[in-house]
Length: 140
Image (cartoon, rainbow, N blue to C red):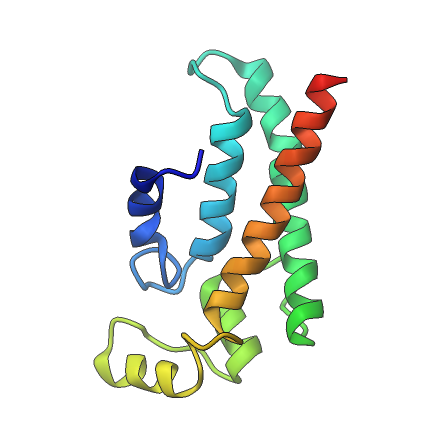
């Protein structure tokens, strides 16, 4: 599942999709991993579509909960927006397509071990646990 092509495809999800501050790219990548593990293979497979939505919701919910715990912060209710996560972690959001703002993001610790890489780790852990639970359930 974790091949180079998947990693490359997820590159442009960074910064909330092409650095636009929208849905967190780490969460989107986590959901893509779930889709690879348990998504539908045909557009008309609505049963598998519905089955995949339950763990997807759990991943999104747990991602938000874990971020709040990991960063000791309070996110706006039900948000997975990159700009909201930035504001909660760094005290403000950044326009990552603006060179001056991007430098400020880096200076604030955006790419440090306690910045976005930790957000990515949270997403990967939550998704990995959910995928393993799905696979354990399928084997039972």
